[in-house]
Length: 113
View (cartoon, rainbow, N blue to C red):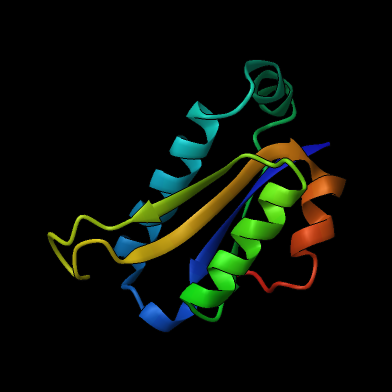
């Protein structure tokens, strides 16, 4: 099984619409940067995605380092600052798509949004 997770900073308290757009940016960016074969396998299984919460920027960056240590593709999203957040604010991180068990090694203790 394959999946993608998107980690979202809980401390930013983004409105639902803003949060949805940031998660979408992360998912698309990570997919574009992933291996084509991996993406095709993920697509065949329904493109499972899970949005998880992290406490703050420091925790988000910790998971980015962990994911990269496991050779997982990531996409770190920084806001353009046109609406709710200051320009350059790191909002979320996508990991994968990749094998579910590989991603779960890193993110299994995080709670869903």
